[in-house]
Image 1 (cartoon, rainbow, N blue to C red):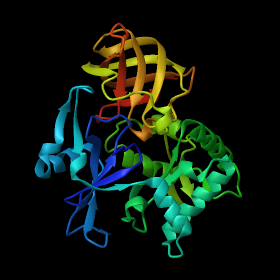
Image 2 (image 1 turned 90 degrees about the horizontal axis):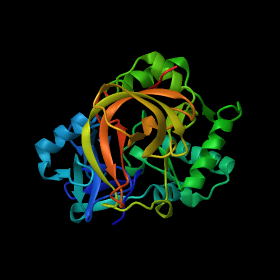
Image 3 (image 1 turned 180 degrees about the horizontal axis):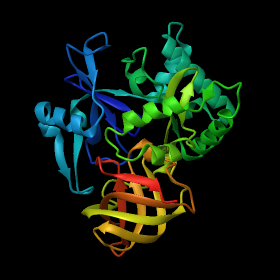
Image 4 (image 1 turned 45 degrees about the vertical axis):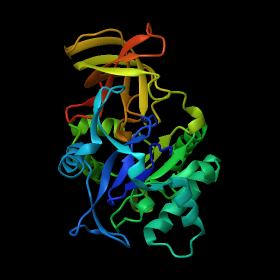
Length: 338
């Protein structure tokens, strides 16, 4: 079984996990619980009622109490992760296949119909194939409510870049269904995100206003994830090893933002100054597995970043450098310095 960012899996006990990243250990999938069977849950499926967990702390709390055997220290990533054995996976949810089914269905909910319309408008504007467009989130697993948002996924590096350029144009077109967040909607997003990513509203709004992959579509919130296709991925599990090397705060200049669109995202940096914490060099990269840190800064901009430092060792053992990874802790952030 191959699973990647944007896809979900259901285990035999009915728990639905969302897949994280593109590189996974043999016979396991790095994924975290998202929808939990619960008699009090407000999300209904034909076989069960579900509640939703969002923050990493709540996800780990659920695992500790119900599936502790899935929590393990990964020797390659040097991180405590949830790794789901493929032999307990009962269902693999494919975003592209799901969107294809919705497009041909004659019985759709209002949200599903809107998701299809969004995908059609974006696909047409970007000039990308249907095989590159999927739908994730609660719509993918049939657990959406009237208040759910729309979570499209675009696969393939070139398709992603075309789609993002199209979104930038669509958001400026009054005839389009795509609209940027209003000030009130942006404040609501900040209130939600600040529960597990701390920064000021001013710093938040400064970068979030210019991101085209999120906003409103015909009155419903959307967040589009951009994921590389299998043919774009060269790294295999164990090719690169990561070692936890402390925690730090730096200032730096973005040298290359060409990988900032994708989840996971990376930024190459230069002119690095360690402000607080662990002092190691060379720190060459910022990375995150969270979509909220995509397009966080542009080439040439100065940033202040706080997060975990990892030593990165490639296939050639002399290729050693450090990176900062953000998004796993409440205190992690990346903001523009000026």
